[in-house]
Image (cartoon, rainbow, N blue to C red; front, side, top):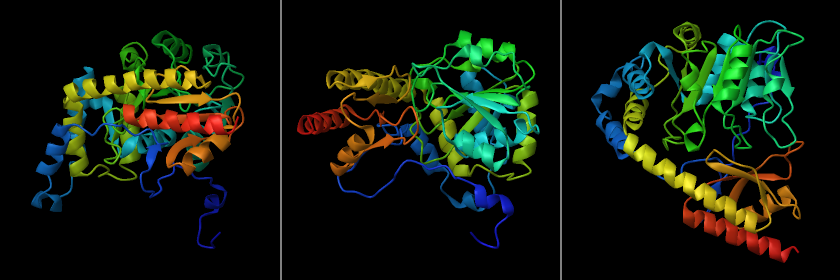
Length: 360
C-alpha cells in the first residue's frame, strides 16, 4: 500500500492471467493460444507498414479494420467498435453500459473472471447466478422477473472455462426478455463450434457481441478485439473511448488485424484443424477415465474422479506441461486444457497416463 494511491486502488483484486514461464521444452496448454500461426496475409500486411510512416499517429477511427469486420459480417462500419484486445473493449463496455447506481449486473458464477475485476474497478454491483449442476447456463435465470431491475447481463458464449455454449434461440430469449438493458455476449471462442449472436442484431437491438483476434485468428500477440452492436450502443462506447485514449490501436495492429479478417481461407482451414484436434483430445481423455464437458471452444474442461485436479496440474508442470487449474468452488477438480497440435495432445495424454498409473 502506498500513500500515493487513490483510495479505491487498495481494495482492487487484479485479474490473474495464465502463467507465462520460461522453461525449456515447455508445452503451454494454459492460455488458449492457437496452435497454428497467423495468416500469412496478416504477416505481410504487418511488414508492409513497418516503415517511416510509423512517425505518424495511427488512424484514430481504425477505418480499414472496421470496414474489414463490417464486410465480413454484413454490417455497417458504424456497428464496429475496435480496441486493444477484447479485454479493453470489455472495459469500455462495463464503464459505458453497466454503471447504473445500485442496479446489479447479472452474470454466471462460473465464467471469465475479468468480469468481476471490472465490476470492482468501476464499482458496479453484480449478481453471480449459479450455473446448473451440469455447468450449463439456465436461461430462465436471466429472463425474469427480476426483483431489482438489472443494469445489464453478460456471459461468455462458449462459456469460459467450461467451453459449453448456448444456442441462438436461448440467447434470443434472454435478449427479448430484457429489451431495455444491454445483453453482452462475449464470443472469444465462438468460431470453434458455437453460433454467433451477430445473427440476432437485426431483431435484438440490445445485444452487444464481443470478438477477439487472439483465438481463432491466432493473433494474441497483436492485441485486437472489437464489439459489434447497434449504432446507438457503439456511439456510447466511442464517447468513453475518446475520453480515455483517442488513438487506441497502433498502425501495425490495424493492418495485421484487417488482413487477418479478410483471409477467410486460412481462418477456415485452421479452425477446422483445432475442432478436429479437440474432438480427438476429448476422446483420449475419456479413455483415461476423465469426465470431459462438451466443448465448443479451443479448450476442454476435464476432471478425473480418482485424482485431485491441483495435484494433476502440479504433476504435469513437473513434466514441462502447463494447464490451467482454478482454485474455485465447484470447479477446483477440473483442468482447463488448451487444444494444441496433434503432437501436443499426444504428449499431454501420454504424460497423464503415466501420472495416473504411478499414483494408482
